[in-house]
Amino acid sequence: MTKRAPLGNPAYWSEWVAFGDESIALGWDTASRPFGDPSYAPQYLFELAQDHWHQMLRRYSAGLPVADLAGYFPGLLDAWERSQRLGAQQWTAQQVASRTLWALNYDHYIVCFWLVGLALTLDIPDEQWLRLLALIDNEGEDILLDRIIAARSPHRRIGTALLYPKPYARLLAAIDAPPGQQSVLLQGFVGHWYAEVGSGARSGSQQQAAPFKHPYWYRYGDENFAGGAYFGRWCIEAVAAVKAFGVDDSLCHGLEHYPEALLHPEARQAQPSVESPSTARRGFWSRLLNR
Image (cartoon, rainbow, N blue to C red; front, top):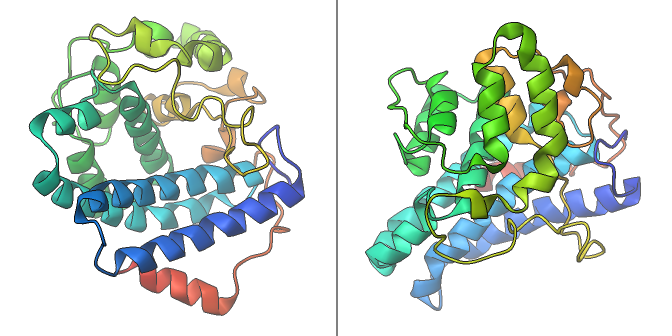
């Protein structure tokens, strides 16, 4: 295995990739039975969806084949859709807004950006793409993310404001620049991304529903590394823009946080030294994802 993430040795990635798949399988097994506390079911299912995108990023970090990542989208969508359906019965309108509105929930905005970027670079099927957009919602709320979505869904209504100028004004400037300047500006965005995304919520025009110092994943790797929390720190937003608008990303190749193999699979091509699940486990996993 040629890992892509700067942190973690092969043993770390082998252990936690296997653990991630096992956790998802166990999560679906639990979700197949009645919940002892029905009020917790929506949150449990959302966290199960979260496990899927964490696992996509974990497997990318470990150096595993990019083409395999798309296989996590069906389960992610199923869990998130079930969470929303049950949440409509459990959560107040205020709770729904605080969880789902980009302007009020910086974490959710970033996650939606990541999922759009992964969906674009992995070329997920149209049926999955439309389900993802229904879950993401927020049409017409953000000039940057709406434009990236519109690259695949041209009828998407485009917002007029940039919700989080820090760090995303740099990416918007790269998209809007003349072609000869885009590459340098994109490099600047990626180079500043990790430092600036940590405090980006404070740049927003609206007060956050839940105050926090940085995105929920920001310190993974600095905290609870031994517990497997770290799944990499990848600027998926940049590859989303490159895929959507054809921006030259050559100056970003080799930058610490740039996931270039999502667009250029030959980059640091993974070697299959992380043990694959057994045939039986793959069958169990497939059945669970296809429920």
